[in-house]
Figure 1 (cartoon, rainbow, N blue to C red):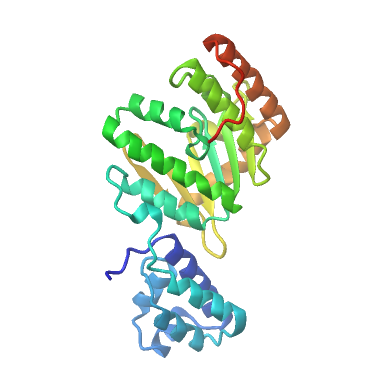
Figure 2 (cartoon, rainbow, N blue to C red):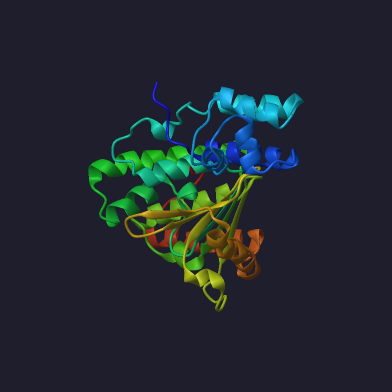
Length: 291
């Protein structure tokens, strides 16, 4: 079986091996020479740019004198390195960026979303996502696959990841599809906000100037690995993982927290706007809306 390209799991394991090396008091050159490797090979491994075999990990752990549960855990991670995720099944119409994002999301322990103009993908209903993609000019035969993949991504919210969504008030008021679709989307937002691991906070339109006005972004944080920031462009996405790239975005999150409504205030505002959508569309009572 051909080896898969390195992804979030390789990035996380590489970062943990770097910490083990540093704890052993070795620099990259010394560690590489101990197992007859080139320095650049070990450097690429530690930065997640190269996958690794169980045997290679075992060699390094031996040099670093790592024993016990930590050794077992790192070797277990290495054994699953080539196991494909659902996003790697060759789904036609699924952009590479979407697969990369799903990979990172599957390994993240904390995700923060800033969506000033659109409900975040992890909280979108199937109907809302479909209407938005069609409006964006995505071919109809690709929309179904992408909407299904987006719904599949949402399963990570059932796995305990800490997710915070900062949503601009404008996103709640912007029509996507008919009034019924918009009302159902806001009902889904209220329901999502009731999860223990999900926080939904609205940034009101009258919040005044703040750093978040420079644009939407998503941050992903990992256990033992540097964070990743995603910025979506019109027809592509940019993933950043260098400190000098991610720092400004991570520093913006507290600014959003400072201007956003509390969870309770946000839920109340969402409820009021949802009621207007229901009145506008003549929708009936909405119960138990599914994400």
